[in-house]
Length: 181
Image 1 (cartoon, rainbow, N blue to C red):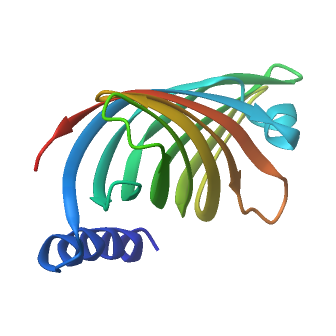
Image 2: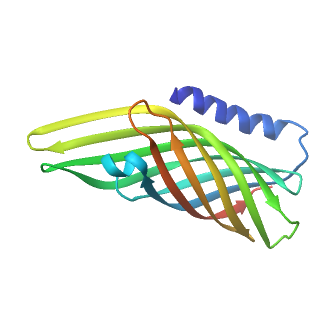
């Protein structure tokens, strides 16, 4: 599954770069992320998370952009009782589409949606046990944010499809985008 998503992401970038889609700008971005688990994900598996992401964004006209975003999230250890701690880590790989409101070159409100995968690893330790599991799951995330010049701040409600619990977190990303083209 990870290889498939990587192939799709690279293909997406190559197709956008080679087609005559009315490209105005391409950006590479870096960002700092905060992830606040909610639902059963917060109750049973993870505390607040921190991490970083890279962003590739291709504008198609003045109001739309395709995005590819990936990174690493480290959720602080969760005490699940009986001296047992859960450690959760995640690598998201997401493809998305953004819409920018207004035509200002300095500030724009944005909304978007992303879909992709989260590679999740959970380690449980304590009381003489040690269990580790990892899985790759489909995820979606609506997004809202503000872009000011090349700076941006955005928020997401990320839902990760799992068979056992509802895995959701509120994501906050602050980033800077470098203009490539």
